[in-house]
Length: 351
Ligand SMILES: O=C(O)CCC(=O)C(=O)O
Ligand SMILES: [Fe+2]
Figure: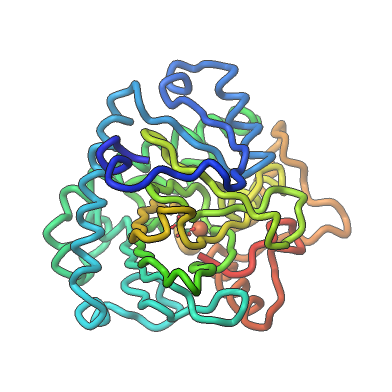
């Protein structure tokens, strides 16, 4: 994503790097109830767990593009406040909100990461919960953040409605667990990846699967990579997700895989240095991570008449809540075991 202006400000994505073959779905066609487009979306969610959604051609999409362009400016201003100031908003685990300083997690090699991020809750931005303290760049931009959350939630909900239909769930089933104005676990995340020294370039953000339901990811520079379904976790198998003008990258998280008994895919992804000439530029990224409320169950939604089959004898039923899932994933990741691999998500840590 997002606009021509942002893409014009950086070198083009190179032509000689391996790119993931993902579907591009048109929001305009989805909203016009185009059957073929809707089937393409379902296929992408089953096969890849990732697709590009072209936001152009409809007012809600165009307004989100404009909002995101503004938020890329906020992203820069925020991290320009510096680690000392932002460090005042660091909260110890299990807190997932606030500031995460550069180098505070590890990548697979055991080396420190190369990103910093700042997370806010949807409930804080919408006023569903009491306002949380945030750095000045966030506080002065609450209005635009509010528009971002509303438009992102709307678009993610359109994806969920399509999935309800294909999974033969009653209309609104998936969205009803994460309504806009009800308590939610949804977050907004701003990330910064500074350019890496030419002689020492490597992964910046560990391979992981997202824990929530639907993630909307806005990138201009390359660097995001996925490990396509069925491929071994070897360096040569990782594929770049090429950012496209006017498109948001959409991916599904663990909750969707669990709710659907594995029909939908939560795919592992990571961030490495931007390819080619892009490697000399700072990479900013913006994400809306839709999550059900913290106490929501991860249990399979095997409703009568739906495509989702009840748990068979011998299969493990996940009875825990989304919160417990995160703790469990984190604990297993710490002991170098991967809970998602057992369930074909193949994610190492949690994000
Ligand atoms: O920066 C990116 O492109 C990816 C970020 C990501 O995967 C996450 O925040 O969960
Ligand atoms: Fe992620």
